[in-house]
Length: 435
Image (cartoon, rainbow, N blue to C red):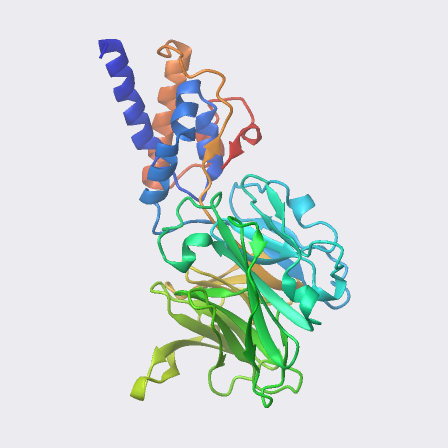
């Protein structure tokens, strides 16, 4: 290899070692680095860097923002669903994806499932679509066969990577790969489910399960997205008699539908309940009543029977922010992989970190009905005009050096900001496209 080319390669490797240490929760910093020069752009947009970046930070994919739905009661019932950023990430196509009667239903593996509530579904139009906030791509799905065969009183749906069935994907970089959409519905007497495969471009035949008459289940809670626990999707359902609700479990491998009762003494209409999942794929449940947060796990009990076991109790009055008064909280979401719960009350949205046991206010304002966190990696994709440029010299080299020095300081100490790290280049970060 030519000595100059070899030196050039060594410099690129050093640059990549620095850039790969950038915090994943600040995509604008990587986008700013990609605008420094064509060489850096080539490094950052390469598949190798994208994979290494995700593998390095795989233990903590960042929450780039969250989707939310307003309370379905006055004065909030006229408000629109939206995407709230918690980082420098800016979603593409949010206005179009969430416009009209569209609502976010679920989010997983970098994709968002949007749709219309059953009451406004038009059989001549698609009710569901899958949206990628990073690329802005949106795929309209054909009408599920359930809508044609049954009179649905209610349903819920979930989106996930197609490899979730066999567990062959680590979900670090699969948001543009094949996916599945699962719809579970009820017509009072029967539970049924069907699966859309992006590889086949079609829905599967429905799977059915009879409902015990005493359960009298008639609706799913669209305000509560599903939880992926191991190889099963779990959703909360409730009845119309103010009695205990239950969990509907759909096994992705066997297509079997089962019902699980919520933890003891849980009344769905009087208590705040969300489903959770553990790192090893176990099913959990979080319940808030008054000032107490109870965490439950679905575990194997005596005689090979599965039971609910209370794993932890958190007294909210001990962890609320100092300037807040203790008022009833309502759980509205859970971020899998981050072990955080979202709770709302009259003055804003709060986040409860189950690992640290701390609680803080995320944003102000009432009227939030449900939260769907968007947890994903985001690395830049820019149009590279040419990748055959020679060594960068003069002012550009000094510019690169200043950026790297600043980046090393920010990465090692946590100080500074993405604006400071990218100030060496005058091109707006918004010109960068993320993928």
